[in-house]
Image 1: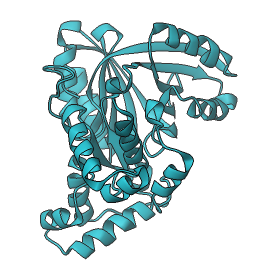
Image 2: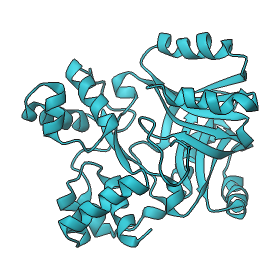
Image 3: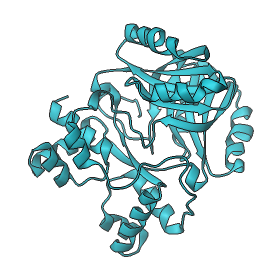
Length: 330
């Protein structure tokens, strides 16, 4: 991938709704080049911007699910989970015997419909572990830069949005019917224009503009970049589940958030109480990370790793196929 592509990806990670004209100016390229590169990345790398809700202010609860499955049935079950609107980051792990996914629900009944009624009734699922997310240390609005950190500090500051970074302590926000329409559209395309959103919501463009600004200012809405990370250097993903002494949990989470290998880190309920997703270039890099980074964290009693072998869904809806994997869905 060319350096200009990495710069464009990094710019969109900073503000997914930044106008391409503004991005082109900061990168020092023409508007036409920025537009061409953006269209090319959408086609070849599956790049898309996704509008996401900050869970706690809008009354959502997020769960990390681990499903042990019959190997012959794991792919079909993972694909079914990926099609659900309330799931994201659906992945096959541990040689295809395990499914890991995140579930975001607004009510206990929504949670129970899947965890108590549907999944346990399937003979394909041999065990279920559900971890409720308590605190996010990295991920969501604190986007992982990884190998796309291609901009200078001055460029990053020039692209930084004027809205505050969403956090879990943001004040509650009551979503309206208009918000739900806008959020559904932004989940499909986070860069949809205000004019297009106004047509879908059947309201005035200025109303859409004000409402999106209100949700972003309130910390209820943010935008993430969805791109196939394998095109950024072929890193291998691994889920790491840790049991940490409660007195050291906050410190361990803060340290993980500073590791460039970590794409996601959160404190959870359960027998293991700290979850991290890391991206390493190869097995040797993962070994060094586990021994030199995780091994030196204070308070860590146990560590369990689950190598990711396929990602069926990242943020938002399941995307269409791309040339990086015939028949494979993101």
